[in-house]
Length: 418
Image (tube, rainbow, N blue to C red; front, top):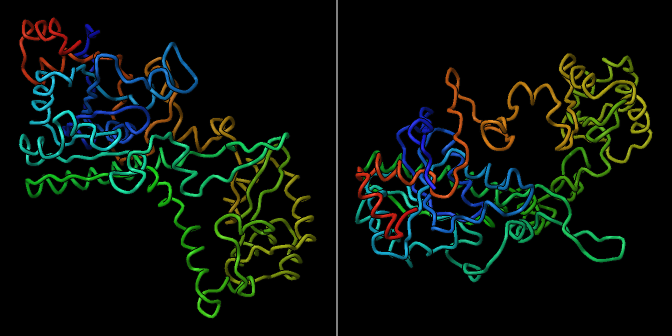
């Protein structure tokens, strides 16, 4: 299952060039290493002979393999090792000996049970950074609970159940927080561990739960509820609301007028003039200074909640221009106005086209968003196409571990690799 042109396919460059990561992962948590591969790290994905079933998980399926795989596994090399064999375990340790990071992207203790836990790998490489990313973490009553990504968002209170036309609850459309934030927090922790290891020669063991990450990303609502447990003599609302406590997070935006979504002539915009200065700029720019004179509002955080008369006036105003026209109007007159897109319309936005665009399917297997990180004066390496199972087994064994072709053939004959 190896490629005949592996050597010419290896990408290099980027700020993490020279950093090697050994990844043992199943499904989406492997995204923790994707962020680092995008920045130039050499990520070696160690797979069992059957491979990671990420390739068939979820939808869409593109040319026989899932978009989840094309995205999460991009930029990585794949080697097959039978870690249930002594020889496979020994080769894994050889890889770790010259690596910087080991990622265990599955339930905590999976590598430990194979004789490849942190203590065993630290004996091979004292500077190794060992990071486990899992659903609920390595401690607590849920640590062995099987789950999928949506569970971390429901656990964290991010998703509110909705009901269908027959009265049954269902999972509403929402942005998946835990499975995306967990890998980002984890990648940041790994980089901190690598910096420490390079400075001191000592590695570390760390772990992150995707459920914890979902809660951390929604800190404002959770901390607001906690703050409201205190008496109103200590915790109030904002001056613009006469100090009345609002509902936490964006729920407190309901009824907003100077901070709300409006229809444009061809879509929607979000109007965000909660500061008095922005509101004044807007009223003057549309030739309606009397609106400011009548309703000047407070200096900060004033949404003019419940002012239906103002809302009706603004609704008529915003229907006079397109979404893009209002966006540039806001830029010209120093007024916060932004487009409201769907995932399907975002790609048509000029800001998206200028800064992101798509990595082309012709090179990467699927059209995918690139890393959002920009480094001045430096282009990030174009990530390699997500690998087939064991695509780089020969390359890694030969170029990383120095194995001879005859030795590699013997490993394949014994079923240690494929």
